[in-house]
Image (cartoon, rainbow over all chains, first blue to last red; front, side, top):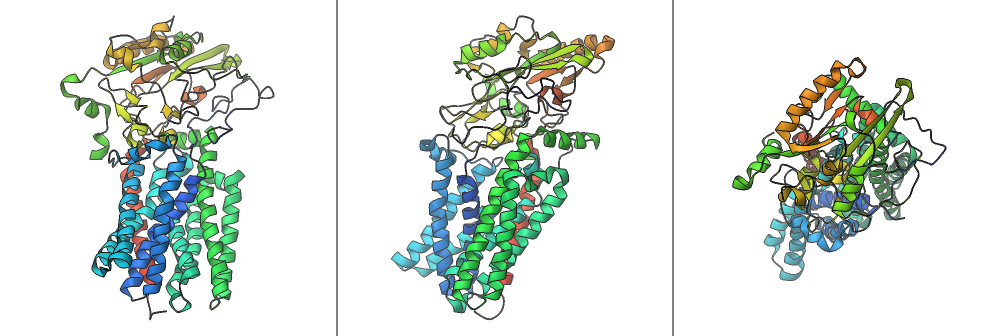
Length: 315
Length: 271
C-alpha cells in the first residue's frame, strides 16, 4: 500500500452495527492530511534555512565572515533540497511548476512557494556574486533580501497547517508559529555550531541551546492550551515522536553545556538538537493525522464553539 | 476581511460578467431517501469513476463508507432501533459559499464556475493535497490512481447542456432536488414547516441553508432529522481561511521573534 491508504477503514465484523450517537460509526468527519514524510523533513529544512539566512546576515554585519559563509552554505543546501522534497510529495510531479502558475494570498502554500523561490534566488545570487563574480555589494544586497524572507520561510509552514480543518492544527494557530520559529533557530544554530570555527561559535551555540529550550516551552504551552484537543500529542506515533523530541533536545542541551569548548561535543549536541527539531515536525504532522481520524475532536471542538454562541471569526 | 469576502461565491460568479448564471445547487431531503444508492451509481456512470472494490464494512447497508476522490455521492445508513427508524442520507460536496478547498489551492486548479459551484480542473491539479485536510466536510480527496484530487462537479458538463446532474436525475423519490439555489431554499423552507408539523420530527432542521454558518451557506444543503454528527457531518463547519489574517498576525510575531532572538544571541564581543 502506498502513502494514500488510510487507517479509517474500521475492522470488519467485530465492529457493532449500531452507530455511536456522536458520530457515524466512528468514521472521520474531516479527512486526515495526505502528505508523505518528505513534508516534515521539508518543514525542518525550510525552517532551518530561513533562520540561517537571518543569522548569516547578522554575522556578516558583525564581521564574523566564517559564520556567515557557513550559514550561506547551509541556506544553499536548504534551498536546493527543499524543492526536491516538495516535488517528491506531489501526486503529479511533472506539474510542479503549476505552483508558480498563480499567486494566491488566500493560500499559504502559494505564498510559501513564491517565498521559497525568491529566497532561493537571493541565496544563489549571493553565492554567485561573492564566489564567481566578485561583486561584494551585490552579494550583500542578496543577503539582505534573504534575511528579510528567511523568517517568512521559517514560519509560513505553521500558517499552512493551521489553515486547515484539522482541529489540533487550526486551534493551535496562535502557538504553532512560535514552535516552528524556535525549532528553526535551534536548527540554524546547530548547523553553525557544528561547522563554524571555534572562535566564532558563541552566537550559534546560544541559538542552538536557546532555540531547543524555547521549542520545548512553546510546544508545551501549545499542548496545554489545546486541552483535550491536544491529546494526540501524547498518543500513538505523534506521542512517540514528541517524547523522542524532548529527550533529544534535553540531551543535546546538556551535551552543549558540558562540552562548551569541545568541537566534538558541539557537533554531537548539534546532531541531537537537529534530530529533536525533526522529531517535533513529525509529531506535528502525525498529531494532525490522529486528530482528523477521530471524529470526537471535530465534534467536541465544534459543539463547544456552538455552545459559546459560536461561529464568530477569530480576532 | 476584504480578501475573504472577495472569495465568496457571489463575488466570484460576478467575475464571469455576462456569462454568470443563477447559482445552482442541491437540496437533499433526507426524509424522502430510501437508500437505493441510484445516485451513487448514476454518479459513477456519468463521471466514469472507477469502482471502490468489494468490501464489507458491517455498518448497516453502507459499504461505500465515505466520499473520496472517486466516490462523489455516498448514502449513509443510520439504524436507530430505539426510535424505530432508519435514517438515510445521500451525502455530496457542499459547494460552499466560502470554499476552503478553493481558497487554499495553490495552483488555481480549483475554481468557482459560472453556476457558483466549485470544480477541480484535473489538468491543472498537481496533487499537492492541501485541499484534502482543508475541507471541513472531508469531501475532497487525493486519488491513488492518477495522483490528483477529485470531487463532485455538480455535473458541470451536464449543466452546460441544460441537463440535470446525474444523481438528481436518477433519484426515484426526489430526495435529491436540483435547481436554482433561491428556489431550492424556498422549497426547503416550506418542506421543513410541513415535516416539523409532525410531532415525531420536531427536531428536523435545514443544515447549511445559510448564510449564517461558518461557510456562508452551501450550494448543496440538507433537511436532517437528527444532529449533523449522527450522519457524519460536522455540527459547526468553518472555512478555515476566515481565520487566516489572525494566523498571519501570529506568524508575524514569530518572525519578529526570530530576528530579535538571533540579534540577541549575537550580542557581545566577537566570538
